[in-house]
Amino acid sequence: MMRIDVISAVPDSLASPLNTSIIKRAQERKKVEIVVHNLRNYAYDKHKQIDDKPFGGGPGMLLKPEPFFECIEKLLSERKYDYIIFPSPGGKFYDQKTANKFSLAHNLMIIAGHYKGVDDRVREKFATDEISIGRYVLTGGEIAALVIIDSVVRLIPGVLNDSGSALNDSLMDGDIIEAPYYTRPAEYKNMKVPEVLLTGHEKKIKDWKEEQSRLLTEKWKKINNVE
Ligand code: 6GU
Image (cartoon, rainbow, N blue to C red; front, top):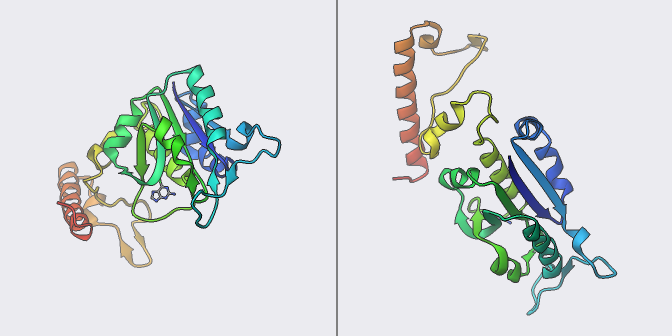
């Protein structure tokens, strides 16, 4: 079973997404164990302070290094980690290839910063992979951590009911867009499901899906300036 440890100053923000739907089911099926660590539990000074003002000035607060070091060193004394992931806008853009890599691990650790950030000595000492999830700014690493967890856990064999679907989806690399899907009713508010899908003609349906996929992939490349 894969184990994922997440360290956060706002662990409550992770609870609902990790205990819903497919990620919840993956834990119930013993495909993954996700352990969230509250950074504040590793603040050993009398005020349990986890943040402080940045040296050199500037707005906002930083998360102090000591609670991270305490927590991470405890975890490292218990097991080896394949990857220690540090979500950060300055990191490498996350993609399906990286998700595939992480999904082969036995032990992952994700260090989620918050507020302005984390004292950089934490990243320097422990991070093996610095990951950005896109060109925009978030309030913290928690949502990025959830993005990484979701994309990794769905790749673990037995997590999705349809074993083909994890690989099929976008052909593993996210660079193929699939044909649109429809369910009943066949007509709704004057909008009709493409006729061919109602015919039961397997070859024609396969050809239609491939053509739609090709068209949508071309459109996707154009609007995203890819290739
Ligand atoms: Cl990983 N963290 C934060 N705080 N902002 C981001 C990000 C990560 N990726 C894009 N923006």
